[in-house]
Amino acid sequence: MFESLTEKLGNALRNLRGVGKLTEENMAEALKEVRTALLSADVHFKVVREFVDRVQEKCVGQEVLKGVSPGQQIVKIINDELVRLLGEGTTDLSGARPLKILMVGLHGSGKTTSTAKLGKLLKKRGYRPFVAACDIYRPAAIDQLEILAKQEELGFYADRASKDVPAIGTAALAAAKEATADAILFDTAGRLQIDHDLIEEVKKLRERIQPDEVFLVADGALGQEAVNVAKAFNDALQLTGLILTKMDGDARGGAALSIKTITGVPIKFVGTGEKTADFDTFYPDRLASRILGMGDVVSLVERAQENIDQKEAEKMAEKLRKADFNLEDFLAQMQQIKKMGSMQSIIGMMPGMSGMQLPEGADKQMARTEAIIKSMTIQERRKPELLNGSRRKRIADGSGVKIVEVNQLMKQFTQMQQMMKMFKGSGAKKMMRQMEA
Ligand code: GDP
Image (cartoon, rainbow, N blue to C red; front, top):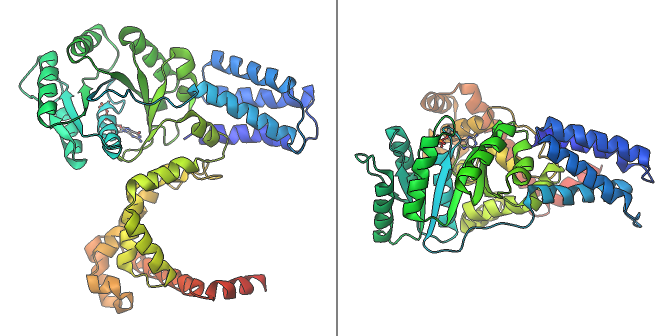
């Protein structure tokens, strides 16, 4: 997310870092680059103009503080202005219980996926969520929601025979009440484009169910187009919030940076991958920090807390300390990490690494490693030294990989074990001494 913007802003500001004093000249140069960086990230030109003007104004009036370089001061100013653009303050959900959320959006924007992701997140926050399928045109969309609801253990309602959307809404409310749910998410039908019929249908449903929140799910990868879509939906439906999806990959970020200013509607959540864990509450200050290449450690820790079993983690740490770590533990560890979401979305939160793009198949590689270990017997996992040639061949066949991959994994694992043994007890000191020598 925002890799290229981060890199370009970094370049613009790097040149200022060394200078002792801000002059009109060096500032103008840097601001020109900031402007270009924002425009090429597909930020709306009006938003860019206003942004640069404000930064300039603040820089000029700024006293040079002792102990802070002019470059750092500018970073702070840009950071504050980014936060302002993204929508100041954290905007959370309505406190109503039951909480009724109407999800709208175009086809393929990620609406159904986001409905399940939001359900999962609400569950983590202590709600008893319930999802209702209100798409009467695409049976496949209903199936998709049902599968996701099952997977995340959310309540679910659909009436495949009905074509009356408001009636489905009423029935879903009753079913949710029956199930003692206190958060109900309505997944509505999408269209290829925003059109009159779609809006009328959603309006009728809204009238009937009286939602506390109306969220538009918009594809962030579309850049300015997402902003236009949001504007049109907001004019017709008065949205209460936005969910920007597909902010992983090569999303240039323009949508996130322009959408609040242009539509006045705050972004509430962002989708950062296909897995249901790839979903974050939107915090303007954290994202600004990320855009400036400073990572987002707070969100990383939160994801870990939400998805990783604390007891399990402590057990692992103890095993690592004792260098008593076998392949069974390795597998368990990998499964924990996977729960936090895709590797790319995790890397993006680390300071200094937000611009790093993982090789295409990083998640697939992890899945292969997992398959290899799963093809071993429990005994082999516990005692990897049992793995002779014929056993390795069997494992390779069983997991559908080549035998060299099994050998590679075993080599890596052996190296890891050796490292752990070195760190054990006074080993760490010994290693430091070796490294100093
Ligand atoms: P809908 O037609 O709006 O309901 O869209 P879906 O929920 O079916 O999503 C369309 C596609 O986008 C699916 O392949 C999803 O897996 C994918 N998708 C949804 N959200 C994200 C996201 O945040 N990141 C990525 N990379 N893919 C997403």
